[in-house]
Length: 376
Ligand code: SF4
Image 1 (cartoon, helix red, strand yellow):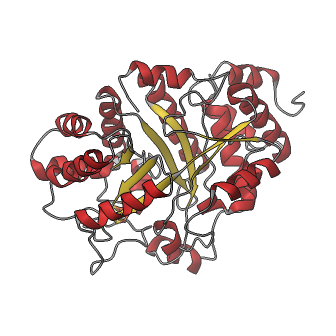
Image 2 (image 1 turned 90 degrees about the horizontal axis):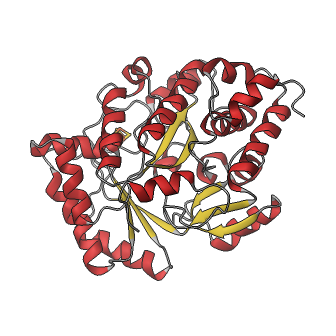
């Protein structure tokens, strides 16, 4: 069936044992053969259901002491929302039937864990059923350092206060060579992995992301995905993998690329990243999310035939990608998401953050998450 793809490579993929060499070889096969193979594995893992979550992004501050060269969001004279302003946004989210609030912000100087705990406790006090998906591994690391406590202690306190899950952002590319160029003051690869592992052992599942399309090599992308697979084999706490193409506008890394005549990744390459992600993570991470904000609605729809099975959230407001040049909108309605999914020949289904009860076939990782003590 996969004529240009060697049988032994197909066999390893089915067993969840694809290698770096397999992935490099797959990048050389005709793209539509690669897409078809990834689609076959998607069907096996999760069937024809395509999910989305009704959620709201809340970025509580654009001020940040970070120095990431790819960032168009940080603003030294930027805003800082008060707790009351954050809660007003949570109330709007509730009114719009959101089941999740995704809360992240810049790194504030001299602001320790109490600030983060205060947000979580305020949301849970008013809306105990609202799923709080908040604080990147970098934010948790930063808050722990400022408060002078260990990361695992900070995670336990966040969990006790009501934090449900964490976004696996700040991963960028998990290579210290790349991180030195694009985000030298951010936590290093081993530190990111350690925060995520500790979150899982504290009963806080995470997503996992990869921001690609800047200075990394194809090998470094593949190694990143394999690192995610290793974490998942150990903890089972990763709910989804989200490849995110780099937006090269209004930030120093992108401006340098543009001066050199390089722009955003070609759509065909984005689709290959989705396919390779599905193949390398098969049997480990069932959910591969296509970001309509980054890819645009039409390419995200096409990605559903290249290994992806989730379209992410309705968001209600999005500023990080928009400021870096994304022009695909800040929010999307349930009706439009379902229209896109039907248009791709798939079955739409609203999900919870943890994908509980969505897939009849897969759910391997969901069972593991239940085992690590997470609750919705
Ligand atoms: S990416 Fe995040 S940590 Fe880095 S500068 Fe921007 S807001 Fe700060």
